[in-house]
Image (cartoon, rainbow, N blue to C red):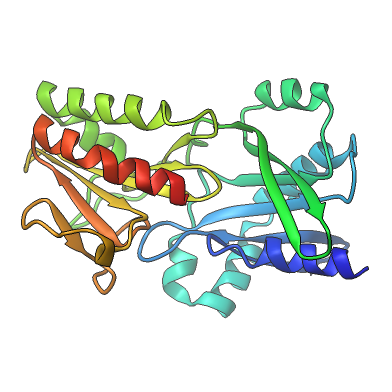
Length: 277
């Protein structure tokens, strides 16, 4: 029982997931929450966990995820009460996330999730004594964003382009630089995933380690990385401490890519962020 309680505390204390159980009518979700930080979008998350290998962990998680998508209003009310109006308005329903955590998975589980158009991560846990818990990403899939229901709102004055719109508006040089960045980050490890959010592209392992914004008018790419600004020599126009500055995505260090030379200079910082992620 002690291990089980400790395990729950570790899972629910992840800085990228603010989770809790809640009940509506006859259904009770084991753990649900919103992932995200700073001023970016909040992502609906379902966490389904079992003590050992369990063939039903994926099926149960998908059931709860579908149930959540059918009860958006109740979930938004929960977020409103706990995190406020701004967080409730920022929920990104196009990219819900399912974390399946168990003592192990069968070889069929990995094949099964690859056939499902959902953001699913299979995470295996192992205990070493009573104090050390290892979480290992076994498999992950990235789904296409769900289409919005209805025609959608008309853009208002001051409307900000989405990440996809900004990338589509980029010239060939900027687009090629982004593709090079994408290829570099995805090649850092088999556990790297890319997710397209409303205003930025997120590259993550268990949590985001690079958030990228494309700015076609300025001809630059802005990155936010998980590197402590105090550990690097800041260079004006290239790196900046944004710990006290609001921005989309996560990361304490801002890195500006204005040229291919900047990209080469940024690579050690990107690798350092990957190791921290």
